[in-house]
Image 1 (cartoon, rainbow, N blue to C red):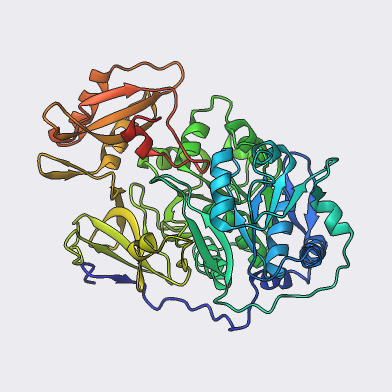
Image 2 (cartoon, rainbow, N blue to C red; image 1 turned 90 degrees about the vertical axis):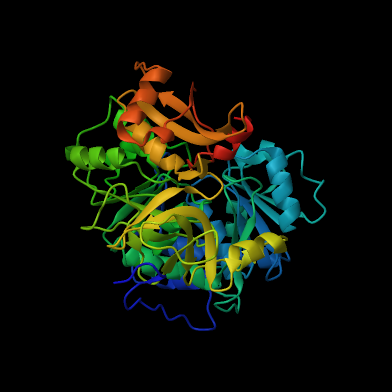
Length: 525
């Protein structure tokens, strides 16, 4: 097979979606045959929402939105912790034809101010614990007319639960079509200002069928837990769309996914599918209180957000008897389009194209790269976002006709396995030769004292770019900068070693665990 050109999956599957289609109605209708089965379980309170209750409450909330005058295509910002009320609000909006805009719950008041103004949201659904961040904005946003709090609420704001109880369970579905705008996700901000990414009604089920079923083999008997939150594209598929598409049960954690909390969930709720990110897997493996594999019931683990270092994958598989399927997705493509798969895991590689997606690697000259040549990964597939809201220039730069530019540098080998080489804006040219920061990071991660690392480019006294490493050491471990430099020189070509090593307590990250290298480059971490 000639892989120097675009890699189109052999006989890619096709998901036929009718023109008249509502994503929430589809997900709910798939589960009417088992109304008593748990759909979502709150890992903190133990509250369980059955599929029958979810169907009724989502429709009641849709009716409440209509009663409050929310018109189809109006927008509502969701800033909610991961509790069973999240899917009620999200699906209820879609049933009413209202567009939910999922927001990162760990952002600041200025960030929320930007999102509310940029989206022109008419409504805000906010968990009571998050309300203080919005209080300075209420009454200051011209378009915002309704604030709905989630959870018990004694203030003057309308509580979501009260709105649901006050409405009839009449099942009225907005007459949307597959190509209508369905929901927005703001990009995580790993490369700067968040962008409102507009997705269609057809996209949720496309990712569920192509990756959820096609790669993971998710089924009704599965129990799933995603450390990535529902507001994140990765978490939305993991924790809502995928399980609902087959009638599985999802565990939701409103708190931070600390190693202690994650292991508690894996032991108490016995998930069969666990979705994580590389930094979390590293922390789990470094936890001295980690339980043995006999106390868990995992059959599939996945990783995304950052490339998974081979050492972490191998150690997890050896200790827990379950491979981690490293993959890459994006807010723009909604979920994973390139992945390792069960029975075909090659650690250090991101695997092969998810069936249903086509990939190509393009050089700086715009031509397709040859085998082994570094270039930008571009994707063609059915879940590509419509646009970035209010950002025509960035939309045109990313969504180039059939192809979506990932901003990630990759190589592909003769067997069709793709290997990550860093972000387009993270690639370093040292002495006129491209150096992948991830390659240097992967080398440093093999040092026994290193917990986490990020490598960026820094200009030296002659204004020539060289690698700089920001290193987090494992608790109780020591290493010097010279130790780490020598370690890299033993593994990689000499010009690739980090000229500077800075030890830090933690790396700047988005809420999804993605390292914000732009902050390290700018010195704002």
